[in-house]
Image (cartoon, rainbow, N blue to C red; front, top):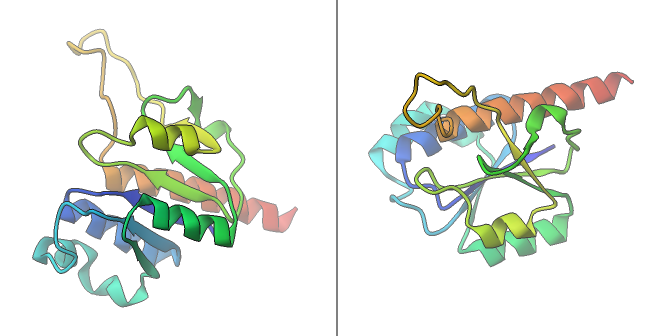
Length: 161
């Protein structure tokens, strides 16, 4: 099944909520250090509630360690970024995909985007009433949920074909 990868997450409640989503869907969560908080942070634990025992959690010392694990296990690296042109809704996900999400403040660095097999975005509405044209991105936990559930929906359909 797909794996969720958070690259250097910074906000404990976001990571806790992602962990809760991973527990609810029985998906692996990979955290790439350095984290912007202690893994035992009270807010992180609170956001994940009592579901942490059901989260297949993997922590990587750095990006290279995560890459080695992905190469060992196989699968495409699917980066989610506000800077991509292709929508996640137009992409056909595979069971062994690694869904990569960036830091809350600045997303994924360009070198990581270049390493990805594909870069996808979650389309945002643009508004002439908003001074900057619209919302730049979703909350990290929301973005993970949106993409992960679409991935699982597609994989469920593949099972019935």
